[in-house]
Every structure is written in C-alpha cells, then in structure tokens.
Image (cartoon, rainbow, N blue to C red; front, side, top):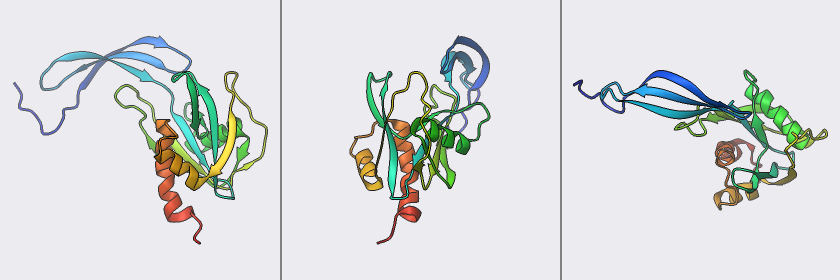
Length: 192
C-alpha cells in the first residue's frame, strides 16, 4: 500500500454520467477513485451556471433590496438583486443587467468585489459579487415570468445590522454583504 501524502488526497475523476438536465442545472453522477485507498465512489454533482449578486449603493448611501417568494424555502426572502449569468458573460456586465432587470436601477462605477463557490461539496459553479455605486432608478423592470419583486432601499448601516442579526438569511447575500462591508468601512462610508 502507498504511504499517505500529507494532507487530504486529490481524488481522480474517472467518468461522469448525466442524470438530468433542467432549466436551472444539470445533474451528473461522477465516479472518483481515491489515489491511496484505491476505492471508487459515485458522487452526485449539480452543474448550474455561474450566478451574480449586486450590492447597489445609492447616492444617499442606501442599498437596493429585493423581497420575493422563494420556492426552496416556501417563503419570502429579503435579498440583493442577482441571478443567473449567461455562459461567458462578464460578471460586472451581468450584475448591471440583473440590477436593471430586477429593479430598474442603474449606476456607475461598477466593479467585481469577489467570488465564491456556493456549495463546493455538490456544486461546480461560482457566484460573483458586484458593487454598483451611484445607483438610481432609471428604467422599467423586466421581470421573468415567475418573478414578482418588492423593491426597496435601506440605509447601509441598517442592512448590515439586519444581516448580523439574522434578518437576512440568504447565504450568498450574506457573502456579498461581507465583501461589501470591508469596502464600506475603509473607503465608501462618509466620514463625519
């Protein structure tokens, strides 16, 4: 038997089979072999497209929020605008598009704050976080057929306090606010 390497081993991908193709993700069964133990196992992996979430900051230091019904929790969720990216789409451009479609807001400058793997245990995609400054209501919304969104703005400190107190429960929104909070505290927050 081979001696174990320090740290966890990188499993070897052998094959994958498509189990299902849906509107929101493809589901694969992927067979892996452990390089030391030589055991093989099948793992089910979801392959959704990349996503983008947008922290849109208004000129009067408010964050644009959306509240909508979410089927996964069978309830309402307070979030920031966001959605599915098109294959090859630039995250910043996707963020500006999602912001406009969901809320009618537009702004500049816009920049990428960071990206995360939403759930690397079972998903292959990334979620990108975009900051849009000087966001103002500019156009009509362009909701998808299943979207009904309540749009509001709240002061930055209120949104951050709500997130810290458990009033925002969407994990990716909390990730975006974590990235944003550093920008807010060090660069964007008015000194006074």
